[in-house]
Length: 187
Image (cartoon, rainbow, N blue to C red):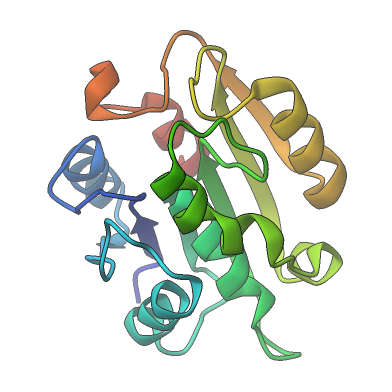
């Protein structure tokens, strides 16, 4: 049975946009089964519906499962793992542009992100549910302040930290359609 990789897009994203088609194709070449679900109401993401969707797509977790998230997709994965039962463990989590602190532009963004920023998770529990966690940041992300988020993910999750140069928010707007470091983490 192939190991599964679940790739969770971010706010306003789709499985057909940005770097998701590329990563699905390239990870599949490495012999993994790759699932990139369409998350619900992507322009107004809500914790409950996104975690429920991920739960529905994953079904029963496996020890070899790997989760890759982008932006709010990272939060979704962490909240999903936070809901695990005692015996549930997965292999790896790779977070691309993860945040617990954000630079927001407008009122709508503040309304959407407020629950994601205020409803905490049990980071100790999350650490006990995976073998490895890696956080990939960009040094020029306009939404994810590097220093505070890097420190947060290192301290709270003992995450390996990778800092990419001039990748913005790892989005189509910044011309990012491939993230080769992800493949390195899976080889």
